[in-house]
Image (cartoon, helix red, strand yellow):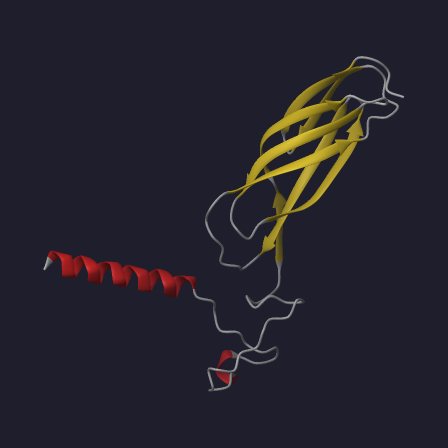
Length: 162
């Protein structure tokens, strides 16, 4: 009896999980759900302009950064790359843009993200690694700081670079 109730419980749980993961019905542009054809075998594939989830709005944010490592490549002029590691909050969020600017002896790098505003996504953290080259040609010898979304690291140019 316990085995039967355990099996039934597992089946109910599996059915609930599958129902919660199913996609909402696709509605043709200009129609409301009540105007959909009664024939369930007819489906409309979503267009690339507007996702099936509705408004098509995109949420932007900053990527979560866990570590910043500076690599100084052995060349002349010296090249500097920043290895950024972090994670995205869910399966729908993607890296969007990487921008960098220099202010004195500091490089400020910003990594932004984007995701569909009303999408249902996996709630799993997604790791990422991004390599960002810095524009260091022509810089004087000295100590420099690079800050990526609030996480900093330093590096030193032993000689003038250029």
